[in-house]
Length: 392
Image (cartoon, rainbow, N blue to C red; front, top):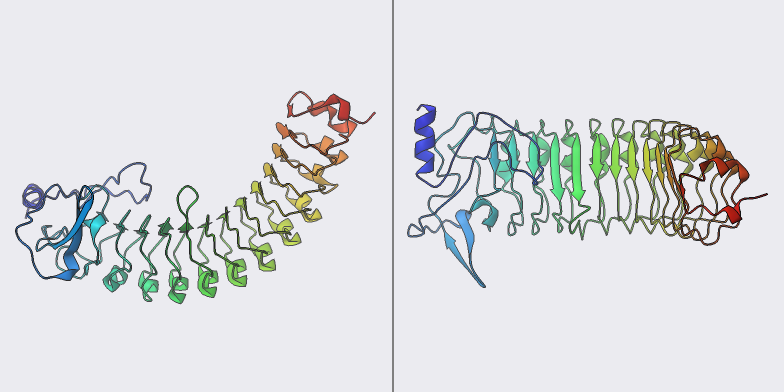
């Protein structure tokens, strides 16, 4: 069948296909460049008894279930080169109650590279056939709010590079086979802007097997109690985001092995009382965000060893009493944010050695009694500067 005929036949079932280009991004601020299942109408007179194709149709305040003979996937003409299957903008895929099998003749399971089930509000589990998509590179389950877990065989997806569970808020466990995803580069759980994850308490120890992982996002995993010690095996990790992981009380010492980290955010980790000295090994770290860690009282001296650090955000660390004396060793530091550190009484004199500092914010540091004279050269760019506090 030529390309024009395939497009015509699939459009007749309310679908459009285009496989000319693939964009593997899972962002939903803009559409996928390839949208394979764009359903525009459905013949509701042809119902079957197949629960696999049950969808929910919404009629203002009413909801009712019907079953469809020609589902979105069944409506496609055979396409041996299909690479992306997306629910965004469709009528039915985001309303599946039970996910159908993907083991059918509609496309080759060996060519599909992107499966995006964004914002499906009903499915509680993935069909096991997902794990047969051997060349899948991106699996996006963003905002699948009823999803509870992943198939035990998820580790079969040997070519997977991105697994996105952002705001899949009821995923309560992850299978041990997660550690078999050895090509995984990005793992997103929780979510900073939305609801995050409400129930996940632990990560599998096999997480440490993901030695190609570069980005780990655990934002708003509100019930996560600890990180597995094996996290220190993630030798290529560059970005670690743990904003609002409120139940985490300590960081494993093995995290000192994460020597390729460039960005770490632990903001609003209110259970943390101590930052371990092992962070001094993060020699490539550029951004360290600890804002609103309201139970931290001090920072390790090893913080001063981070020669690549450009941003240090400590705002609203309300119990922080002092800073390491040799903080002036951070010669790459450009921004130091200390606003609303209400118990901070003074600043280290060594800060005067910072030749690249561009922003110093000490506003609302209500207990600050003394500013070292060596910092006077920063007065024109400092926010919250008070000449009356400068030592004579």
